[in-house]
Image (cartoon, rainbow over all chains, first blue to last red; front, side, top):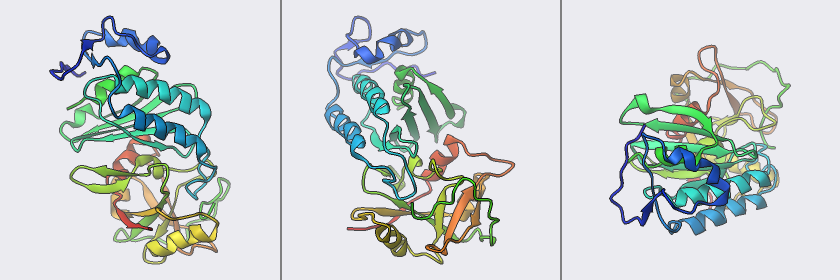
Length: 158
Length: 143
């Protein structure tokens, strides 16, 4: 587990911070003993572009990749919008590359060089993720969660 | 679709593919199917590489038979607007290093068509696509 304590210009830590309603259920995880996530009082600047990119996925036709990819499921977009807004409020989380999976789910990709994180969000809100750490293979992990603080922890592995 | 084999296709692989070969994948302009990676450069995203809903195994093309430009022409001929599309290249040796394999399955429209298949040692997992994506540089982008 990460032990990150940010010295970035953040306005507050998670206690007492308003959370997006869609991720309110995840706030408990933020108070775990092993992880400290610093939250901003407003989303990072990249949030607007990410939001637009996620919404834009709904305009993709089926077979958008010529290999038979499905059009993107609206419920996946809805789930991703709430989750990514939350991530944009966590200090240290960089802008993800927004893409789509062949199944029509929203995909998010980060690559910092020393680590990478791929995550897809299904229509029920389940997140499937792969984290690869070039510095320490014992940190590599593939799993699923509904907890965006787990993604935040991984996406702040600086 | 322009290349994928249907899920019920049990056609045997027709030829062994050398580990020296390179296989290609089309990458549409939108959404983002390419990713700039520090120290690596522009590569495919992991989600561009795995099997599609109508595919049993994901489709690729052998570069020695189907050039990157030809691969995009095939999509254009099938009605896709390939402006801004890219092509990523993957060494077969890298696929096999991950425990997967590549088999040739030519189609009428693409004689270079091939597929990445699981093996007894390695099934398809999200991790293998994430690893493979880092070894899938973009070799062509159509303006």
